[in-house]
Amino acid sequence: MRLFEILLSKNSSKSCLEFCKMMRGVLVEKFGGPEECIVKSEIPIPEPNDDQIQIRVHAAGVNPVDTYIRSGTHSRKPNLPYTPGGDSAGVVTKIGKNIRNFQVGDRVFTCNSDSGTYAEYCLSKPMYTFKLDDSLSFEEGSALGIPYFTAYRALFLKGQAKPGETVLIHGASGGVGLACVQLAKSQGLRVIGTAGTEAGMSLVKSTGADFVFNHREENYMEKIKALNPEGLEIVIEMLANVNLANDIQILKWKKGRVMVVGNRGEIEINARFLMAKETSITGVTLFTSDQDDFNLMYSHLNALIKKKIIKPVMGKIYPIHEAHAAQYDVINNSGTTGRLTLKID
Image (cartoon, rainbow, N blue to C red; front, side):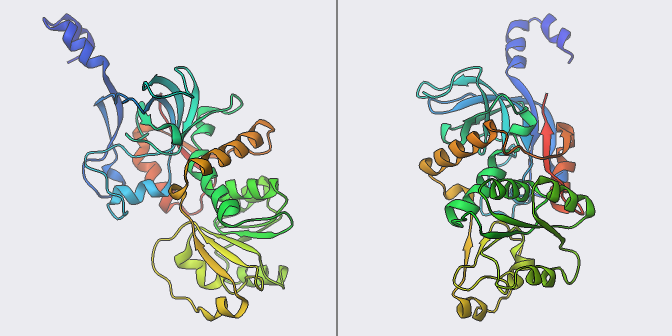
């Protein structure tokens, strides 16, 4: 039924009220491939409870973890049907009565959502909601949450990165990788990045990396070793099931550490490489962060944004009806170049 027919129906007041409470968004009704990301136009707009913030979403970031959850292989399985996504940027439209630090009209971004962000409206808790600087667009804002907080946590909260140290960032042309490059350079680290295409390598270099290598070349690790004969202090690892066995062989004596940010399977390693140099491997996940961690990360990131020292590097921007393509591309493209984002108007 078209809108004017609804308005002219005998129950027009009730029908119009119900129609106005609906939104457009993505629903996953069963676990499976990207094709399960189906856009629906009559999803009820989620209403905030006393401790939630309602946001009109203008852009939603697409993360690899979104695809793991959708496939049903992630440890976290939402009840079906559900709307994917945790990263978003938009405007606050309603607040619960216990919300103190936000008000209607605030421009914000999120790194987690109680209702999913691939939709016109979402709900978020204050812990995962942050003021968005006016210098950034909503698309750029949606690229901040998980990528930049994860990068910060890996480098500084867990990795204890220090000025003058050398960091190798595997997969540096993706959202988290580029955030790592910017943050590491901002704090005086020497940065080596890898990417899988010429375009990706060029992007990593232009973002600030001191050296860039193609991780599809068979001997690229030998080149990195030659550049760093004493070994590396830090490795940020996005694909541990492929690279970890090699990572632990290029660590610096007593100082080297690998921060595992991403993994898609099993790998066999020789622990003697760790024992011989007393080096370490640490797993990193964003959502073990507490309120103090988020406050610290946001305060530092926001200061760097205001000084124009860091800014999200955008890749392809998709309309919401191509959410399935965005989820396919974030995992299967030949070489990521920047942040993949859904535009939601």
